[in-house]
Image 1 (tube, rainbow, N blue to C red):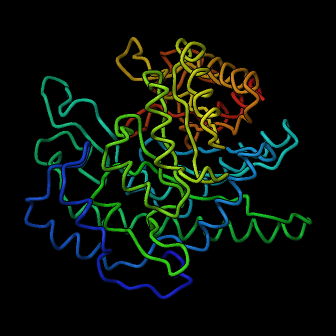
Image 2: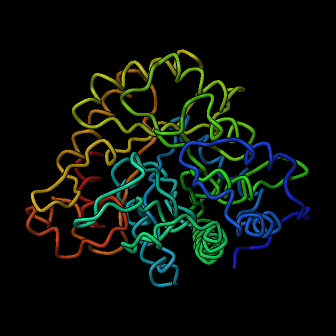
Amino acid sequence: MATAPSTALSTAPHADLHRWTAQPAAQNPQWRDHPAYPAAMEALTSAPPLVRADDLVRLRAALAKVALGAWQVVQAGDCAESFYECGPEAIGARLDMLDRFAEAIGDRTGRPVLRIGRIGGQYAKPRSKPVERYEDRMLPSFRGHLVNSEVPSRAARQPDPRRMLWAYQAASRVLGQVDEHRSARAAAEEAAGHRGPSLGPWSSHEALVVDYEAGLLREDPRLGTYLASTHLPWIGERTRDPDSVHVRMLATLANPVGCKVGPTADPAALRRLCGLLDPERTPGRLVLIARMGRDRAAEALPGLVAAVREAGHPAVWLCDPMHGNTVTASNGLKTRHLDTLVGEVRIFLRTLEAQGVPAGGVHLEAAGEPVTECVGGAVTSEGELTGRYTTLCDPRLSPEQGLELIADCF
């Protein structure tokens, strides 16, 4: 179970719940007329918080260190988490992977490395099309275990609001282990003389399904409204419009918040977005995750970094080299090539250095096991992808491939 909150909070629905759930939201499942929806929302709004408000203060302090260039970040984990991989062994493998990445970056940069997992809530995925082909049939797209099932049948692919409760239960098990790991690491850091904000691990996920996130809004007497589903929620490329429900909801939170920024972003719109999410220009509040694609990064990124810098936002800039570099292999599987990912990270680091802005670190989709989903390192060709291709959605790096990327970039 997740650790109990540090302050007594009301279990009544948050005052802003209906403000967010009463309006259309991009990527939100069409399930509000489902007979199970009212009971699911009632159960979610009365559930204990999954994260403590006090911990958000600690994470923001750590991110402020990154924004000022003193620390680095590695944010990594599954593309889409599975309800069926919430046991101690599976979660332990992901936390070990995150620690190995952080230690490798720290060894190469000489700076403390903040650990943030894509963990304990990455159960929903945005999709560009409502349907997808499976063999000779068209089915509703799989949108993550929070929404529907990956089983290739029309019935299994129907959105089910009860899955929000299953996601909460899975996240509770996962985040309980994350808390234990962070406590053990903090004790070891203190014994070694480390002072200051915790290096983590902390949790993060894309705040995609508005109903789930709104159901986990909670109130803290000192911080105000916070999102109790994760430490660091982020907004995706498909929902970052400044007028979107997602942006307006995250703008009200005490959590640090993140946003993916792709090559089609307009500098003026990005300045407006940053103004909404970080109106007081506070170090540690805002994380911007660049996902350009190697072939577009050199052209698109400099103007965006300059726009944010000139507007006075001390954002933490991370490079996500995964999402702009997905290709289809000759056997039909989605994949990514390690050398392409390395290329984008190098462009990112050069761009930030040229503008005098600290490069915060990297955001990677990576597995805790030796998967064969990306080409590079031990996976020498596309023909080897089928060896252990287990992702629910997009291809992930293996731990060894992630370490190779770090060695080639830092």
